[in-house]
Length: 182
Image (cartoon, rainbow, N blue to C red):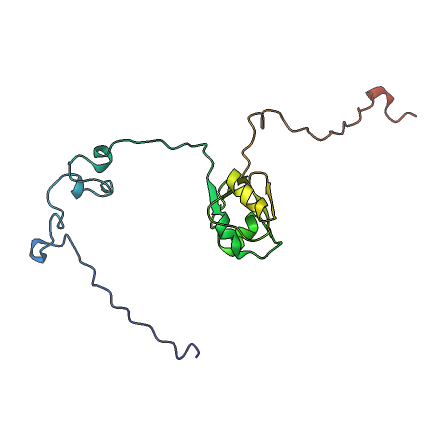
């Protein structure tokens, strides 16, 4: 195929409605927007949860619990899920993401003791529950807790200036009376 064979594809599109072009058109004067009010003005958009003046759902439902802004968000993997790995294999966060057991790391991986483990594995995770550690070691493997993925800066970080590189001091200019003299 080349440019001489190319044809414009006709896509069916509705004909745009022309408004404000006389009363006889059916959409003249106020252009179908009625009289006054916020809905007749340009740029109006009501809140997505607006229910026509009725008490909004957000206010009808009681508040419950809280969201911890500093809480860790671990990707959870159970011991039973680790049976898909071969005997003697090392399982870490990257390996769990690669095989699809973990979709998003968040603050790291936590291994829990759900299910039975029959493989001898070396498991490296950011958190390991006591029951999971017992099951991994019972199967002949080892469980190692590693550092966090996204370590937050400590409170003292950023308070001290980084050391500046040594600046070379330019030599002093000679006194005006000693110029050109040895």
